[in-house]
Image (cartoon, rainbow, N blue to C red; front, side, top):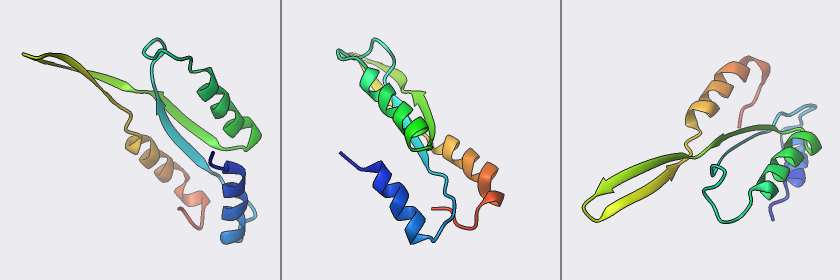
Length: 99
């Protein structure tokens, strides 16, 4: 598993920063669309927010149904580019370096 705590320490040292703000962007499946429970993911998000002080931006995957002669298929998309852009514009004046 990736060590997010080490990432936080590494970024602080690498950029000689007194304070850093780490953003975590993710899209997750809607409740009931998987055979397994999503509790573990939500606990992970809570750990990032409360344990490591990350800013967590999350949203449900968008489900797109495509109909064809062969039948229906579902594609899931979780683009976070708009959310990232909004955060960059909003916080830009607060930082010297944005990675």
